[in-house]
Image 1 (cartoon, one colour):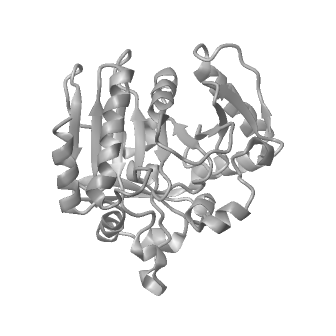
Image 2 (cartoon, rainbow, N blue to C red; image 1 turned 120 degrees about the vertical axis):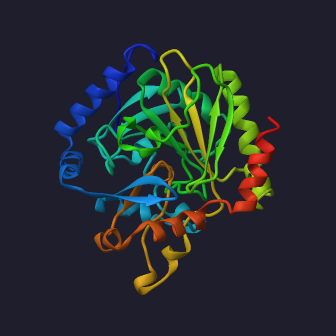
Image 3 (cartoon, helix red, strand yellow; image 1 turned 45 degrees about the vertical axis):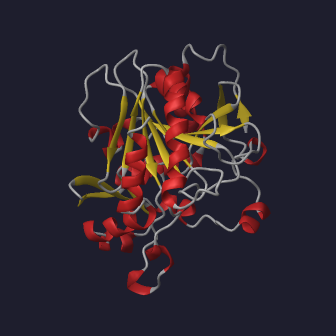
Length: 318
């Protein structure tokens, strides 16, 4: 892998990303093959608790769905997000000192990116919001984060995902608020969502840290250091601080993932799925999934009603 030189961090980030992507699709056969395959990918809509969600039958994403969760197996394999372990064809752009922006070779859409840490440190929500806000402000892309135990397929290495927001139903399901609104809005419909609005990046960091600290206390995981959650950071009106959407979690995978026969569905929800684009690698699962089954999948990995009411009540005190 080669990290390309770039002058300045703020100026020209989006054009540089578009140039990187075009060059990678042109020169990296594996990425070109998978991007071309997006044109023939199957999709269909389902309704869950009044929300329209989009199923995507994406066989290339099978690697994420079957990624090991056992610490020993994770430690035994080479980390695929370390620059020295990436394919020689892969190129990257520096961002904010700590990050390298690369094209995701397992895309759910065009311009699907990964921001990977230069150092091998585990996934952590501590301090992550600042760089997510900055990246989204500079590019207009949605930034995504999966906590360990909450959909992260590579929990041992700090990374984000990003891409154009148009493919994710979440961006069309935001609360209607005034331009100057600040505060917290809780939505109990599955998949449950907490919307954070702030008038400055510093205030948003504080708001998020306080909200994240409440999730494990209300969900029965108070002893864990990392909050169980998925994050989406979405661009708002130009000049305004991006919106942060928190999806609180209790489990990494739903019970049907471990079932056999007709009760087995290989669906492992992460931030993309919680944002309404449900990735289904196997065609047989794609054909059988309906709104009721999908509701049960979200029910397994999200907070129960009492836990979410606890969280919503605590958030009112912020």
